[in-house]
Length: 357
Image (tube, rainbow, N blue to C red; front, side, top):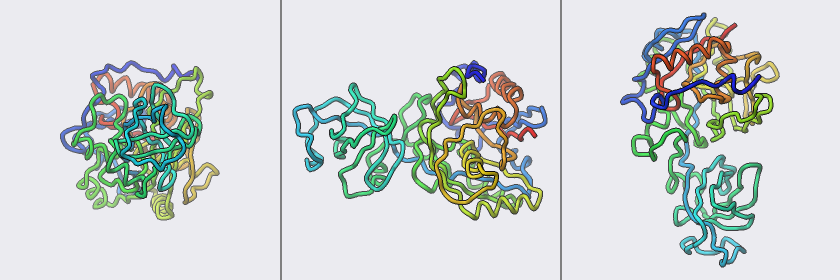
């Protein structure tokens, strides 16, 4: 299939720059049986069933963006023993952590006028001495010369990495709202945005009506925002993301199946984790890496219903929802959403999609 088959015209005014005033105060497009129903997110309570299981991604967005300077060409590059407050007068750099590898090392994108060399040093946020260990594909492996855990350093010195289509710098409102209310396991550089609609009251109401809640963890990478640039979709290489699925989630899914209930994935990240863990045909607990690329023709094994936001043109996630609902139906749903002026992307409105069988 050609990538341009997944393109659509989106007026810039429909790209949500801020969240709604309250969580859940958004619209919901219900896509089912060839029908498009314009709803409110609060109507989710009418659309789920007591025997269903809702699978949520409990990843937490880290403050992954750091600014600083490269080492001056005249300074020694031999070690990290230099004091962190020593002024480095080289060019400016912007670092976006993609993945935390261990307590002191990360993979990161590094933006600079000239790429840093292996063995060179950076000074980030004015205090953090960092050594460039080398390249790993498109990323740089960096080591932080500090006794503190790198996650603690990022929390203290980093900035929240809002998506590239949000034009303002992260403010106090974003610190709270670009995070789900159930965020727990730090490691993502982008929020699982379908979950942003939920508040504690909605989760409590779902439980009270008998809907079961289950968890996966998938640490969303910055690659989620990258459009497919290849002419044909089979030429695209997916970015890798880490996921974990506990045995308790398998038990909840098995229970829902036994009750004739449905598996509802909240977000494409939850869906990708579940389908990746079932790549042999049997859902397995545990952790792993996924580069799963779901396109039309994919046979879904686990997920029956998907709650998701509206995605970027020519993106892997648009291809995923086209696979889930049928390409014609989903592109028609997107045309409808543009016509009805739904809000798009991370802070936008939601869709509830029942899988085409």
